[in-house]
Length: 364
Image 1 (cartoon, helix red, strand yellow):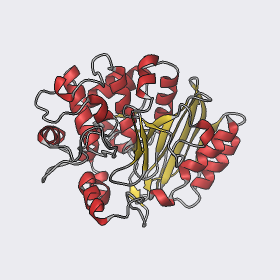
Image 2 (image 1 turned 180 degrees about the vertical axis):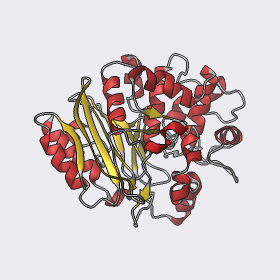
Image 3 (image 1 turned 45 degrees about the vertical axis):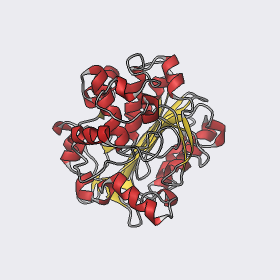
């Protein structure tokens, strides 16, 4: 696989590591590192479209899946003076029936991990209405369990209630446009020619920590078939939908730049970022049996090294995405990083991001 892009002097080992990552690839990827506004690594390679053999280019966009949650968490933190995590959801959304706080929604402890009944996962407004009437599966705040799609329906509606704007508009106006970031939620048609085609590795599976068949059925309800369908995940309808839990698109350069901006005090006031990146929930996922550690929408360092070696755990935050993407910040070293890929691999068979972060750790 051919690799393009640049690395700053002293970061040449990351080019070598990226070549290794692409060594057995069926598709493509990009990796970027930014510190204090300076790009240290900006690499891309492989195939943006394995069907047509189109190469990954500098401006190739890729679906971020749950990497979107980190972008949306940034919007929520930027609006912390209008969306108080200690307040009940009902304070902003009167039709909401459960006794859940905003902080519990953002930290995946609300107990609403799936939408009940038959529904269209792309109909954001309908899914929000349904959730407003649902009973939580457990007492809110008592358990942590990842809310893959419902996080987006809930947070997106809360943001709409306090601003009057859709979450995609807020991503554009508060995050992307002011800082020239190639990030989108509700991706416009003019971006379609730049989109990478998503493909799944032959052994791709979700929730690889989970062995219980009953909870496996619940997981299938949670994801609503999204990751089972190449047609759906590659559709324009999916990209157009403002799924705050997972339909954002962007480049590695933009995502690394976003986290660098946060470290430098842009977009989110430092006090609000400190609140959003402290522990709000932690433990083994009550559904998926995976270790979790959340701030207010951001993933934090966990026991399985999602955000790199232990030496970087203090102050690390970001969000990963289905299939292997990883985006975040290391406060120690003031590093923003992002790995995006259009080849989805199972978590228990994918060491690509971990390898790149280990090499980066040795260099900074």
